[in-house]
Image (cartoon, rainbow, N blue to C red):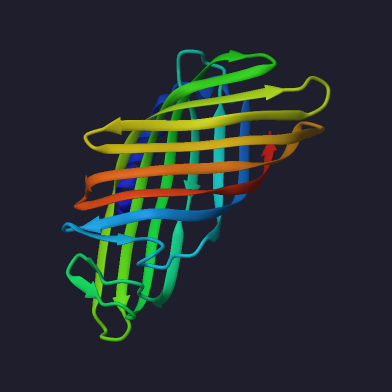
Length: 254
């Protein structure tokens, strides 16, 4: 990851909150979740395409993701949410049919080993125009994608490795509906962008239960997360990948 660029993005995202510091935060939400990620699609380098399932033989993985949500009472200034979602897949086995990726070509029955990463850090600036029995958040998500594709022919020792990274600005919306007097809630988060051949959808649908213990509330929730990732010459790499599966998360609300 280009940590210098990522750090600069995070600092820039936090600047709008600096003038709101004197007013204090009205809430801090932190959480951790486990997402069962099933990948599908392909990646492409120099016009050579590798299918994630048929060629690279990638398996589903369980990955832990984290989030931090800072809320303040100043209406005109955006609130801030940070989220980090690792995606790290690996696969191995016999190649079903000949394929090429970058400068490497693997023949049928070759023994392939592949690793694919699509790590993401979301820096979300948002406003809450409505908050009663239901919340509505609207804003901008700067999603920083840090990717790597590593393909090896274990029979010949040939190897092709490419890395790609950069920010994608996305529109962001979140809803939450609560059942009064029960602690039960449900909702959805969505980020979306389509421009210059890139198209990305990040969607989560959830239901959960929240209970108060003095000044702190704890929650448990589950749902379904899906990402559709289409990159066109993104740091010299093309991709059309879908990652989806169920997740379970816990959170604390101060």
